[in-house]
Amino acid sequence: MSAIILSVKELTVSFDGFKAVDGLNLVVERNELRCVIGPNGAGKTTLLDMVCGKTKPTNGAITFKDLELTKMSEYKITRAGVGRKFQNPSVYEDLTVLENLEISYPKQRGVIGSLFFRRTAELRLRIDEVADQVYLRDDLDNKAGLLSHGQKQWLEIGMLLMQDPELMLLDEPVAGMSPREREQTAELLKRIAPGRCLMVIEHDMAFVKMIAHKVTVLHQGRMLAEGSMEEIQKDERVIDVYLGH
Image 1 (spheres, one colour):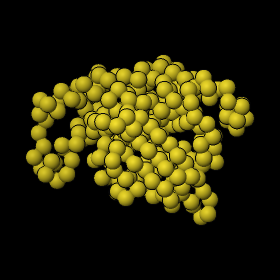
Image 2: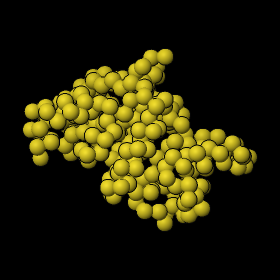
Image 3: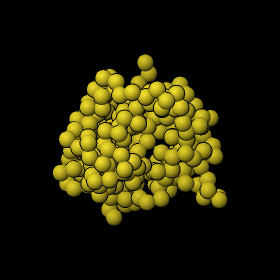
């Protein structure tokens, strides 16, 4: 099995002549926890949009394992093993935590799955495992709308885990969290990374330092630097365009 799980080659996307991502090359390996940082407008979220199929690139290729993602629809990319968490938590607030996790289970999807739905022992075991992982075991019967902002972030990560993706794309997962919640989220991400790959966009440098195996710095749609957090913090170019501000 190849160590490379995601490969981006000469990736470019233009919006009305403006190149949000410009000739980007990037390789991410299995079991890796990769952080992508950079100033606003650097192309970070646009990169995730293209990987998950929300935005189609103008040029370039995105290869997930042996699949060319630029030729696939969003739902097919999801079914292939790519999961995405957006900046703002997207949970079903009128449903309980348990129900949110339940409907995220792949076998419950579709008309047939809905018609013949039953909560099997296998499904309940999976829900309990995921709820434990995301610190929500004691909240399974609570409505998602009653959770704190940080707990909603965890619930959405849990909904992704129910799908068991090989590549998880997380856009600012600790935004709005308390310091303790950020520490717990760092522990969570490090615990779920083995066996898959996590690609995290984040502005909180203390959090990035806690979790990152490797850091990619984007600037004006291009890669500015890449390396360990220690190397990135010493890079004069990165200090000039991002860390120094």
